[in-house]
Image 1: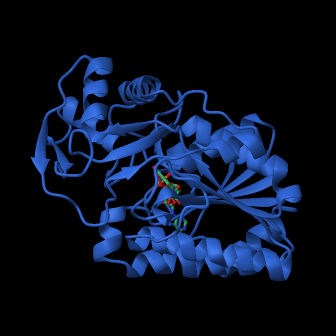
Image 2 (image 1 turned 180 degrees about the vertical axis):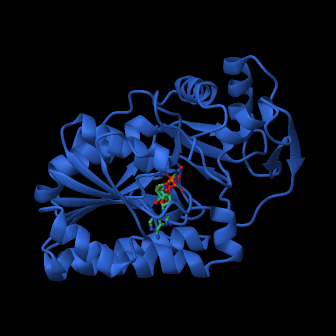
Length: 327
Ligand SMILES: NC(=O)c1ccc[n+]([C@@H]2O[C@H](COP(=O)([O-])OP(=O)(O)OC[C@H]3O[C@@H](n4cnc5c(N)ncnc54)[C@H](O)[C@@H]3O)[C@@H](O)[C@H]2O)c1
C-alpha cells in the first residue's frame, strides 16, 4: 500500500513508518516538525515538511504522489497538562485540522484511516482494566479532542464509506534500535527518568503521591512502541472488512510511577533523582487496558512490552543518541 503517515517525524510515527517500510509499504510522511525531527523520518520514506491542516499541500500530495491507499494519522497536540490550561490548540490541531485532512481524503477518494487515539478518551475509570465499551468521559481537553475526532470518523464512515480504525494507545514507551523519544519539551516518564539519571535535567518531579493506588503515585499501562507499530499494520490488514471500530492498545499490566523509577534504576544501574510534587490537573489515578479485543479481532499480542524490555530498549537508544536526533 501507499501510506500517508502524519506525524512521522515524531516518536510513535517514526516507528510506525519504520515498520511500514520494513513491511514493504510505500510511505510518505507529512510533519511540520513542531515536535518531531527530520532525522527521525526513516530511510525509504518520502518526506513533506508541512502542516497536515494545509489543504493545498494535501491536494498536492494526493495528486502528485500517485494513489494514496490509506492515511495513518498520528500528528497531534498530545500533552495532557497543557491541554487543561490551553485547550484551544488541542481542538484546532486534533479536530479542526483533522477535518481538513478528512475532507482532502474524501476529495481524492482516499477512504482508509488508522487513527492514533488514546486511553485519555475514557477519563477517570469506573472499572479497571478498561475495555472499549467503558464510558467515554474525558477529564482533559486532549482526551476530549481525540474523542471528538473519533466521532467525526464514525460519521464519515456512515456517510462517505470511510474505513477507520481508532487505536486507543495507553502509554507508548521504549525504542527501536533507530527510533526513540526525543521531544523538545519532554513530558513522558521514561525519557525524563533517563535524563535525570544521566544529569541531563534536574530531578524528576513525581506529580501526586496521594492517589488511591498502592504507593500513592499514578498507575499506567506501558506498551512498547514496536508493539504499537505492529497494531497499525494489523489494522491496515483488516480495515476493509472492519469498516469502523476502536481498539485499546495496551500491555494489560499497570505500573506506578515509583515502580517505573525503581525498574529504571535496576536496568540502568544508576539512581534516578526525583522530587515529590503535587498532582497535575487532568491525570486519572489508574489507566490499565484490557487489549483482548485487539487480540481477538486483529490477532495482536504484545511481544516486547515487559517493563524491563521497555526500559532497556529506551536506555540502549538513549546511549546511542545521548543528545537525541541531530536535527
Ligand atoms: N506517546 C504516547 O504515550 C501516546 C499515547 C496515546 C496516544 N498517543 C498519540 O499518538 C500520536 C503520536 O504521539 P507521539 O508521542 O509520537 O507524539 P510526538 O509529539 O512525538 O509526535 C507528534 C508529531 O506530530 C507532528 N505534528 C503535530 N502537529 C502537526 C501538524 N499540524 N502538522 C504536521 N505535523 C504535526 C509533530 O511535529 C510530531 O513530529 C499522537 O496522536 C498522540 O496523541 C501517544
